[in-house]
Length: 589
Picture (tube, rainbow, N blue to C red):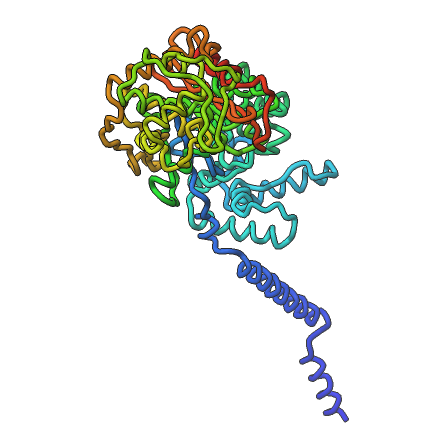
């Protein structure tokens, strides 16, 4: 009995107490919890895309277009500004960011425990989420993921990526990533893009006040935009300047000067006036170098000031209709191109679309006659003409009888070029058109002589460029050279020597004929102005198309006006009215 009692007591002594059992259960639960957390983190990690792929994301190559003076006019496919770094920026630019977003950035790890604790206390006291403890590294992780989901898994991914970033990169490099990836304006990323959009300077040229205004947007880009809410932006920028002084980045004098110069941002110029042009140049770029994957600088032949004048004049003058303008130098450098009155409404480029040139094609026929011995003073007969069922009348249905070639050209009668074609052969006309660069696009019929075969405004302007290029061949071009972002040449125009197409005497006579058109009594009289050498009007059947192409010493400008659906315009609109007036307004400016 005594032995049994002793054995029972020994067994009781060997069994753990309730407290010890609870402690063991707690440890096991904690271990299971850590295993579960580790498993969940591992699961989230495995579901993440490749971190290297995120960091080096693929994107469509950016093309930066520059005008003939090397000034940037627009960029295509750009989603990021020019890359910047702590080393390349003025110190006050990145200091403004650190001062307001994460002043202990260079001291803490991926996560700022002190900052998080301070935020928790502050938010608890205020009873709302008034402040956060997110570090620049965490914000960089968010920007790289480009996701605003408020999920636990999203936060776990952010933490994983934050530790990965600081394990792979030093603090300066993380800051570089943040400055280049943060989205502030217009769907573009990077403080350089914001600087160019807000202040028309690269980030490397931001002054202290502008740097503070850019940094002010980081909290809420729309709310603190210097474009949309300049007062809020300036107010927050002043706070940032105070923080920069407090943290020893700038002096109080520098802050005061910067604060006095804080102003609302002026938006960058509307680049829509360049869109028809850059769309056209992009096509030529691909034809020159093929498809490309790296970013490019494209140095174009555009004259930005002329392009602006062209776009504004066209928008003002065409009214309910559509219009297009091409301006080029005699050797083919395209200085301006506008394919419509409003790119936002329609991206269709009417400068390259085929239309009937009407009488604007007649110089091709007269060149044949001049080349075959006729002179501007030679007499021709203006009377009804018919060949088969084709019997067109003069525009005003009047006939002048025996008149000089110059008079027939200036009055744009129809019978004379038809009779000249009959005399010298339609093949001679088509051959001349081919020499001028448009022959393959023409139909072999008499109506072609009066401009029934379609061609673009660019093609038509090219015909006149040859005439004012002293009869030498012209091939229109829009690109001078192309480089990569490091300045290495990818393509450079290397033109062949021009070919003499027209003899000097033929060119001289044609210059005289074109000059008469803009003289008193000519169909293009409304285009007459100082410096105008000559020009030609054109109007297609039922006033569906109205054209004027004219020249000064250094420019050939073609103008077209009509409707996209090919229906007639007002019968009062001819090439000698609004198109001639548009030409005059452009060259007068």
